[in-house]
Length: 175
Image (tube, rainbow, N blue to C red; front, side, top):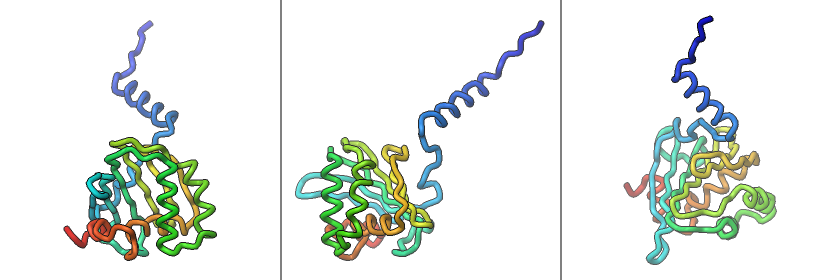
């Protein structure tokens, strides 16, 4: 009786496929269909905090046109609790009503990880205004409230945001 051997490429592909299926890794790249609008570094006093990049389908920013994605590459450690507190502070500063954002805080508590220098957090807001967070390339949570994504992006993109120079660079105004 003749034994057939499996092609090593088939074995490798099946192994890779099973790792992706069973590890919860998202294989789709949320930025694959988007183009970079702009990028900026946030520096507070003499500390580098993060590098950020904004993406859209055309590479130009249109406030109410989605999908949009914001990618943040962290240059320092930040704990999840501090990220959530800062997010809440920024929403209050922008005049977003507390009753609007309060339901989002427990969702962010479950989604946001503690950040270490070198980590990447990405928010992808699709054309249906569904929001998905990625941490170092892996999906970590979704928020289906259609007000969340635009409100979260306002922290960086609103004309009244805390860091107008970062905003202008993200919007591609200071290339």
